[in-house]
Image (cartoon, rainbow, N blue to C red):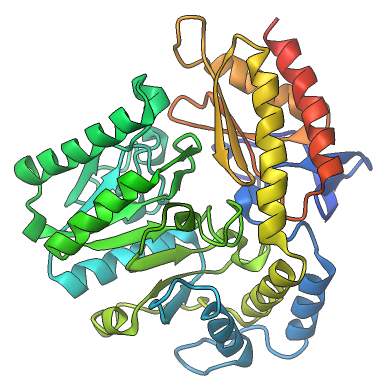
Length: 417
């Protein structure tokens, strides 16, 4: 009898029968608050009726039309709709299936367009598990261990993670930019550097937001040296942070944006957006794929954009995000085991630490497990897996946030006695 790989570890014991909105229902009929959203994927909640209807209609018309062979309406509609929300000047799109594929497409574009070999990433980054994407990932060795040699040409600069360093944000930002300049002097000359790859908020790295001064510093250096600024919005895009794009919190202009996760409410779809001038510098044959831009996924994505707009989900993410982080901080202040609470919109992380300030992985994992037992599904992240993260769908209500906070408060109290 075939079985799933033993390496796949389930974060919760739930076996799902069906989902509806913010809730998952298991095979025994028990209801669970899903504050994982498929790792930030089910942006409009589970099985939103408009997304379901769009996908069902498309399944009956065309399931797969390989988009370098034939063109189909859902892809054309999605491209047009994305032009309404993409940052100014990013008017050319390439679609794939997964976040890792989008990262690798952007990597190829950056190297081909600039003729330069090197990439700078930032400590704590997560960009994927394929070899090139894993080579750009520094949020944990578990994503790249055992597959060396990794791709060459990747250099790592500090991210302004103030809590990790024990500094204020200004000091951490000045340090990070100073070390980036030192990296230019010692490891990769600016003229050999194709791109910066940056998350507006570290995801797997611990839910750590960037800040305006840091991203402005990257933009200045990119402009001065002809380096591309590639912003990975795979987890932070499509309203998740309370703005449509995470980088909008920091008033920075990207050259390339990476998209996936919340784009299609659970259907596999990803892409990169750049200016047509930049995209045209990709070499022939460097962009393609059998399933990229799948017709059903594109139809679901168009419906997702409709729902985000019509139900004011970006605004809801901002309002409910403030409610969530204020509640989680209030809970954390009562516990000596919580070192920091941080986030943007509906991306909120609680970092557990010991009395002497060291990462407390055991308590974080106990909290995540205890929450699942009480019907609140959460995940961990961070280099030491000592950060518990909350990622509810954008449709979450004030009452559902309160429900989650009641559970979380009891959980934190119980595991940190």
